Image 1 (cartoon, rainbow, N blue to C red):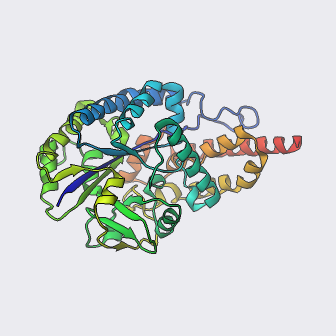
Image 2: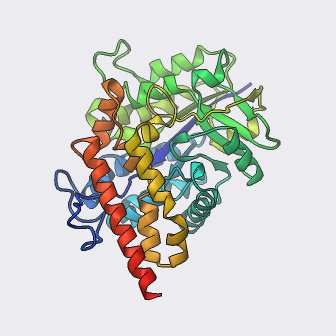
Length: 402
């Protein structure tokens, strides 16, 4: 019986809120594209990541697809990063299109604005999923058949929704609390569903690449493709090794000097030596391997922080106040039919804004600080709420005209 590496990479960049003061509120409405006072602006960040990660990674992946007919992978790409690629790095967007043109790269469905709308507004959530599907169909000629929620946020309700929406599968974190004694290296079926499968991330193997690869203090450093493949082969009974990680792992989070690109390039060479070992897209894994059991997830699990819950985005009162205030504007914002106002409101739903407000400490706090363009979580909150008040001002002005 064959066993598969299921490589899934997630591409995303938010529209970061610039240094926006209370004095800007009511005066200036350029929330995202002006310079961030203490960091780069969105265009500079996008172009830097494209040059360090997207373009070189895609060049290597295309070479691998050409060299190894059995090599396949899956990716998700948010609407917010697609818009930025269209505007500021069209050559990088073309490199993603070149990958999907091979017919062996599957795109996964998600929310257009990388939002947590599923937990606050089902109507808005479904609109963003529809927007994303239309964008993927237009640019890549694919209709996604497998779903991932923002930050791999998953529970029974999400699986039930995805099942009824017609998806064949859904992705989630293979966290210990939901697996118990079981292994993530199989296909499962979500409880309370009929026609959908569940692929669970093997977080230990994924994080060896995404987080530990360049750590010279790690006992397994340096990690070679040959060593990694030997680890996989040691699990004789597994059917699918789900390696889920950010696309930016390659070249941005793990710099090119670390050897991460060489690791990626050598992976098929060692894995495909055995004819029983294959690569599969997420859909192919679902089609090829039967579920071995049901998974019950009544409480939400995500792929972030040591808790693997929503606390990275909703764990403190600042985060809770900000997101509740934002979704509180939904009915009035949508009713305004002001496309500029609606788009700004949706860009503010991106989960990154709330992630920057996290006040956790130790290792998780370090990771939050690494990704944040702000000096402190409180600065992130202040900028966000100043923009929120300007949104309310613009909404009031719009309503005066009607």
